Image 1: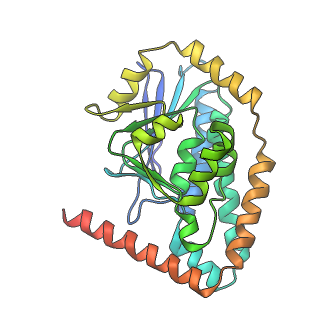
Image 2 (image 1 turned 30 degrees about the vertical axis):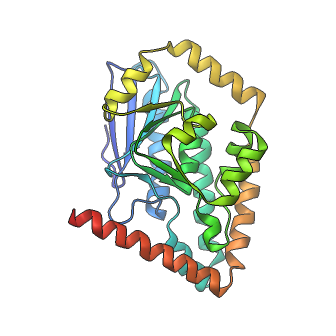
Image 3 (image 1 turned 180 degrees about the horizontal axis):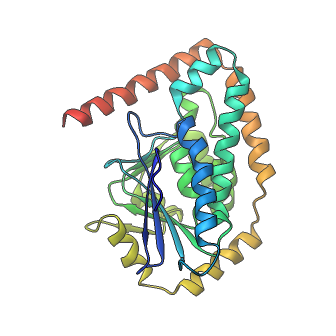
Length: 275
């Protein structure tokens, strides 16, 4: 497979499966560089697997970071552009997020299933990214959270669209409003996580899950769900435009709260590096 700056991509022909993992230096989040390169990854996958030369049934996302699937939005990037009143930069970032989320939701316009392999914590946009997939497989130690309200924002890259489709409205609003951290088992009980694994790791956990059911059934099953509860890209776009406007109106207290979260993420990263 092609080499990327921000992604590690492996093809397993014996399983008809592609595994793409975000490579992260520093806080494992969605940087503007990752989002820009995602468009290249999308085009390459479509080009390589559009014919039958390379059989493909599953596209799986993961992380090269041991304890984090993804921490979500690039908070330092947000803070910098909010303080400098650079709305154009935030609009570019938000639109790239929606492009990525919608391509995952549409399985890159390929007749395949998408799977999120969550071996570590999925916060904010990382949680939204996981929910865009057909299937979520989670390690029992993973945690899930939408923390945006801690600095008076809301999750603007798919959380409302996915949660209000996947859950009853009371539970969806609880997840959106509270900022609670949920264990994998709790999210499984909600119906968001499809399977929890303990002792397996990486591709082994995926293959063990897939061996329990046929591709044909699951593929058509999720096609039917998307037909019954369709999601249009303009819905995601409208909400992320509201998110950009909300960013630009944040007051100093909210920005201070964002700074505190940035510092907490950096401290945690330094602690992990020393461990």
